[in-house]
Structures are given as structure tokens and as C-alpha cells.
Length: 148
Image (tube, rainbow, N blue to C red; front, top):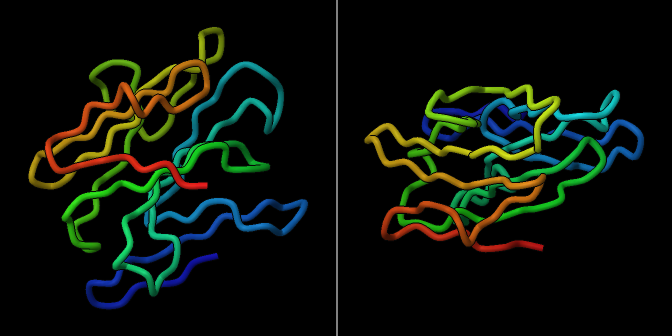
């Protein structure tokens, strides 16, 4: 479902589990896909960054990671940035930034990169299918806060 933004309000995309109707991901851009070993939907992992609600821009955006059935990890990206200063989101296994990855035949390990227009980058590693916040490379003034 899409809630179109107006003026400086970003568009909010909501992604749902097709079997249960439960909202899974909320993003301000397309959800990124990482393809791993396995068959069908079980082989995919999804990465999203967005504000939980279109009227709650005073709260930090959330980085979400998981499957088509559930978000397995969710972190607030805490900083002094305003909602309209959102980063682009990429995934990478090296320095090449991508919107999707094919990791079939290798461990599901990669880096989520949040890149702001002014050049600031946050690098959040995913190792063996789990975000590792303790190994994240975050500039001063940025923090990942685990959400339930």
C-alpha cells in the first residue's frame, strides 16, 4: 500500500504478508532484496528503511530486515537528521553499491549502506543472516537502537 507524500513529506510504502494480511515493512523507497540459498520465498531476505507512520516523522526511521513472513530485526537509526533528509539504501558485498544481491552458493553475509546526499555513510553488516549492530560503522552522532 502506498501513502503518497506531499511537499516535503516522503511517500510511505507499506508491505504486507499476503497470507495473514499483517503489515511487515514500512519504507520510504523500494524494499531491497537479497537472494540466498533455498527455494521460493524462503530464499529471499528484505531490507527496508522508513518511518513507522506517515504522521510520526518526529521519531527516527527504522531499518528492517527479514523474510516475507516476518521482520526478524528492527533498529531505529537515531541521529539529529530531519525526516526530509533521508538516505538512499543499498546492499553490498564489496564497494559496489546495489539495490539487490544474489548470494546463492555463499553465506548470507553483506553490508547495508545508508548513504546521505552530503556523503555521510552508515555501514551495517549482516553476517550469517543477522544484522550485527555492534560491528556497524557509524559516524559520530549516529546510533542503532534495537526495537521490539
